[in-house]
Image: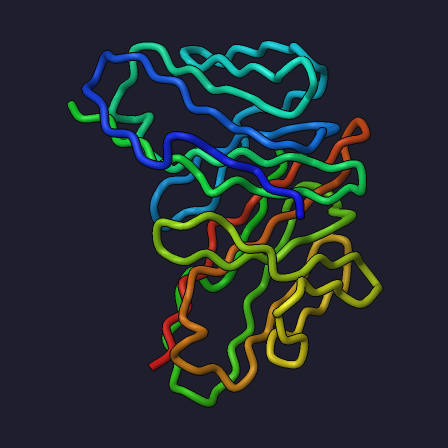
Length: 110
Length: 117
């Protein structure tokens, strides 16, 4: 059974702090997506990473795909209350199947 | 681009009735649509995958006779919860994919909150 783990599960930080969320698996993914979901809404795609070692930046968010394409990280610099939400990683397997991680619930306190 | 809508956004129904939820890709043709269920503070649970014009593929443990999926066109998929019961109350989310550049990014609808009394 393919499994995608995320850590931490919950995170509560003060505005202005930095944080990193991790997404790990024993499986190799052909691509990996990060989504953010706010309460009562659908997830919104943030980024897709495809190449091992790839780094992508989206304003204060930095995404990295592991060299072996089994893990990924999301780093947020100077977190703001608007960053609050559920962060989900999703890995696409070689069988064109996408599996979602359990999510990291982030709360940024003003 | 890549906008997906869902209707209704919320619905309250009596136990035993059927409820239909629509999922539309507004500005692209979706090769595949997905239906998820989400419980509070939990991740997405894939229910089924559907391709236009063919039968949906259901995940293990999901009753196909209970959750009827119709994918009538490249822009529309519907999920019908038949004979709904309180345990079917949940947040249902659809997504659509068009397989850009060889990988399948999913674009999600805003979700439908179903409450069965």
